[in-house]
Image 1 (cartoon, one colour):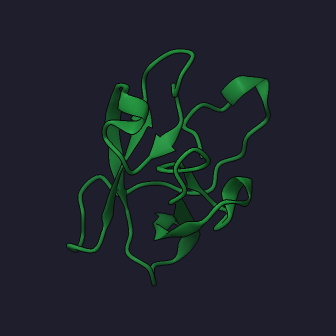
Image 2: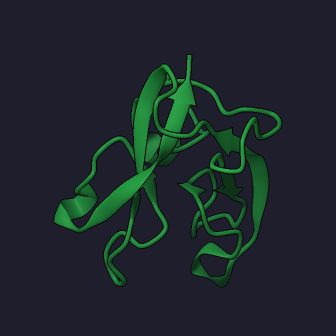
Length: 102
């Protein structure tokens, strides 16, 4: 997932929005990478993803909200910390993280 509509020269489409403030303790904070050439625009749940810079972009609603379910990669060396609409991004393990609201 990315906040860049032209991420790596590819076409992207909006899937929802983050919450400005958490509405419950279960809402997950998310960040966007800021390091050019490494993770710029990539959405993650790790504020130090790839030991690089990030900036907070909001919170994902807890499971059960109306919107697009999102997952976070769990497998080091593959998809760890990467937020995606695919629970098996890059054919690696992921776990539910929250919902991008509509």
